[in-house]
Amino acid sequence: MIFNIVIEPRALVDIQDAIDYYESKQSGLGEYFYQVIDEHLDTLSKNPFFEIRYKDYRGLPTKKFPFIIFYL
Image (cartoon, rainbow, N blue to C red):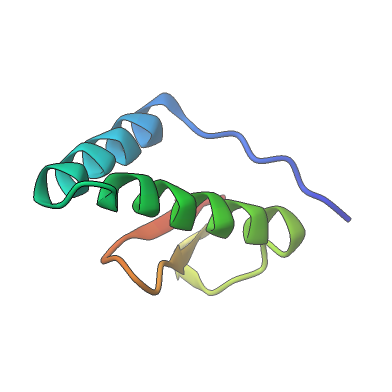
């Protein structure tokens, strides 16, 4: 079963800020960060039952960047 993912505007701003930050550190790193996030979102659409971090919020940490995707 595939689950729908809806990204809130605040999260889009955070993702774009991270992309800009990584791109400023090294050319191409921002694009790589975006690919990692996209892969994690694809994983969540297939299996959203990861660890509950706080109340009803679940979190999926990225392995290559210090970033956690929080979701309901």
